[in-house]
Image (tube, rainbow, N blue to C red; front, side, top):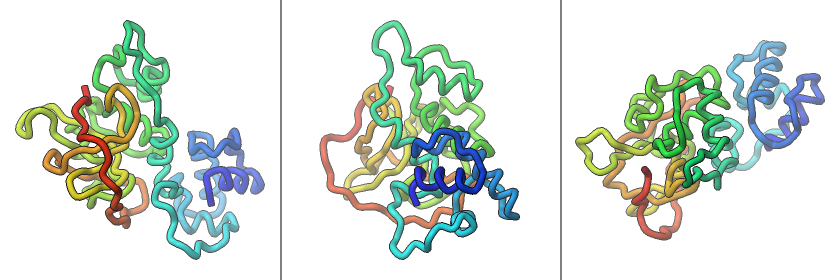
Length: 233
């Protein structure tokens, strides 16, 4: 079941998901939670197997695509905003500034590193009950987020920048890996949301949201392409 199909199923049951647009936004999550509460299910806002069963979704006979799993709405949101760029002039991209406003954090302009803001937007929008790092703009602070896990699609991955023993870092979401690098979907990667390769030697931690279904994924092997990321400022 896709997000679009989920929205239609919720609407058919009398629970308003907002626009039927295939986007796992706040209205859709609120509709899921309302449906769960009305049906005696765990109210977590995630369309897991029990919720889908109550909605009348047919049984899944094949392994779900890890890149479109309804159990990882934050990862779906991350993919949805691929291509968003910061304003390289004196102004700022209002979408990026809007992320900060919704999270109620003090963020001046998009010249300030926003990889942590991107991750916080994706998780905060789709898992409203999840506890975020105190200083979510600090990439390495995400090393204590949620619970530890093995690298797998949707995992929050942290990396050191400039020096392993320093304070600078980068954070994004695991998409896949090759022999030498992790493929990371992140923000502020060359001033945009995109996928870049990060050398395995820079890897620090892999973390998973506590309020999401437990991580049960596996590494995803991808073909190497391009050079390693070297611009995350």
